[in-house]
Length: 539
Image (cartoon, rainbow, N blue to C red; front, side):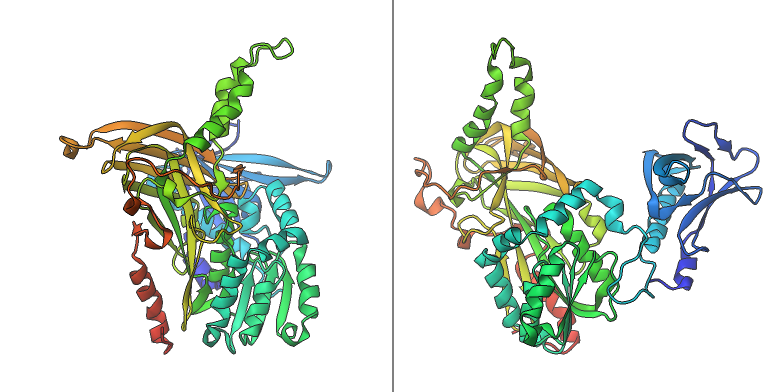
């Protein structure tokens, strides 16, 4: 928690052009200025409005239960929940805020978020393992119904078993921990989203001094039972039921360990909780297992998959379904099926070009950076084909002091429970070998713990005149990562195309990674720097 001195350093007062309740005349600053003032005098961060040094009654905003929305460059809307004690229910109240210029609007939004975050982190004097009653950052950004379903899902043993039986996943974590005992021996570890507690037990096996296993779902009770059944290890493990955004720990951690990856690395938005845990609990230059994630992308060609998805909508082409013409909904159904990312394992020979990657460094990335991820795409086709979309997978790095290990979900590698994911275009594009494919993958987080995906792929002119950069074809799609099509079939054998020579086949071990951020060697070098400062060595 920040000290009062730090609090005072935050911008706490703003002069406004006007302020008004929704659907009410504005209190104008034409004669006497209206002042917006942030404070935490009563133990809760709040926003009040003043005119002539007098508080404007009825406009008080509790930052713990409020959200701020930008209506325009100089206008915002603050929505807050208030309690009606007579009716014993919550209702929403809106305050419209008019700023004098765009710069003051940006500064106000930044201050609002800072003070709101401070409200979230109140309560460092709480006993170990307890949680604050103040709404957390998780509650502020995640829809309650989504959170309820999420924690219910991970609170069931059958789903934990599904993850434990992913031996690529579990075995890689075990090897990464045990092979790097030097990082764990005598250290304090926090297991973020501990689930069954298996990673906490691995850390204890590696000699951890103490492990705090933080788990928000009912799985925390099963974790306690499992850990109690392994008393030699369990005496050094404390299970804390609660969200990492809310719980308090008695000491800082030397190491964070977690399995925060979802489909396409970022689905379920647990990476944000992992980053919040880093900010709240990890000592400076502490280690994170994993420490780096990479999203890999490449265009693909799969006629079977395209036809399979397109055929799903044929049901809606019936002009006489029990006397009803269904065809008016055919177009919507067709687009609906193509709005679902496909989760399955596919043959890497379906890739039309070598992949590129986008790097997320968990040691450095800010939580807010994960709200919106924008990735420019650029490929060169290895073969002539009809491009049906973009294939994606991820890997993560465990950068131990003794051994560095990658956990990969790449096509052609041993299959994991994450499989791979493909974004399928409803309008494929045609390319020739050597032709450049450009585009953009834009992912925007939403409050259902997932992302809306906007994909655009374009084929540039190939051959004479290509330097002019003329775009011949463009295709776009919008997908909801929350609602995938779980195809999950094993890769089928595909016949080699006539124009595809054996040396053109993409073997997963030989795929060159063209990263838009950092090369792998540079990543390891950057990871090594803080270790060198502390006297540890990368072998």
